Image 1 (cartoon, rainbow, N blue to C red):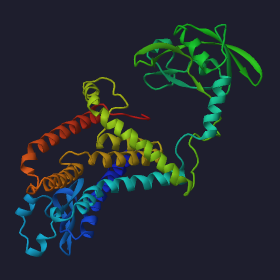
Image 2 (tube, one colour; image 1 turned 60 degrees about the vertical axis):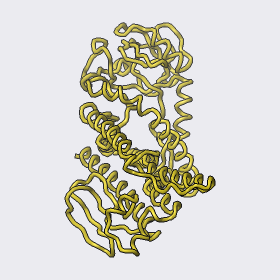
Image 3 (cartoon, one colour; image 1 turned 90 degrees about the vertical axis):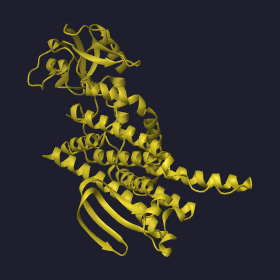
Image 4 (cartoon, rainbow, N blue to C red; image 1 turned 90 degrees about the horizontal axis):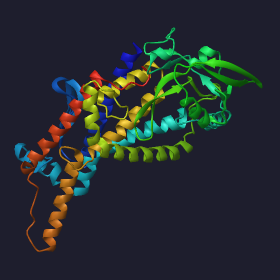
Length: 422
């Protein structure tokens, strides 16, 4: 039930974000005296509406976004409107360039503001990122080779262990079965002394899965030797290839009393940290945008049954499913962080200089201004507005590409979704 509730909550959060995006357009347009005739949440048939002044507000039957109608977004639209002389001066494209730019960018700015505020709350009052004390304790355990023992482990070869009470695809952890306990320090494996975590990994990797080996641990100053049967696991190399290696079923030990997540930084200090996190997220967003074309083949492979890579793009469906998992496992900070990332991404994506995105309209508006300036410098007539009809083929091409990509991600999120905890 918590999973379904989480999906519904995240989908609602996305709907609110998009509605606020359109509200940003409307608010700035009204502030500049532009004529706004409609503001609706959703698409399709109208479920409920009311009129206040010249604007109709309401809710439509398909909750997949929203829209605002600003009269005269292009000269072509103005020709289709029945406007009196007074309203003709209020149409969008007749307003100064700086006002039009603000109105067009207001949607993305709304996403940025929303993301920043939510991120600031997380940083200031909840805490995100790794607790320095936790990181320090983990680093110390790597030196001392203190381990946490896993009761169950995922294996690439079930024959190298016993399933016991573990879930499907898992076996009992070898170290756990042998009696090694959390906090024990491994000092020797198969007659080879280990001095730190890297040497432990190297030594264990040379073992043969399924063949027992003597492991010596230091527990509170007393050494104890037990027999452990390593299991087969898959490890990814630096070049991306995967190989089968032996593992004992242990990880770096950290005192459970030390929280993994850092404490809240406070409202004042949190502002600076939020700015830093925001800068990092924007960099990652631009990197992700540049990598989108290269993610299409992995998405297709995932649909065809291959393992879904965690760095492949997700649709609204996939993001909502992840949100459901986070609620199911009571990871609310992660839930809101995902919402922050999504708002920043949508805000940046919407400013790309391509129609029908707002960034495309901004680019055209500034191109018109530049073209008029060049004509004036050369003593030539003003070339006037850009003919949007000539841009329609390009616009439709972008819509088809985006629609195809969206369909691809939705399909992958349905047939082979990314999961975090499940």
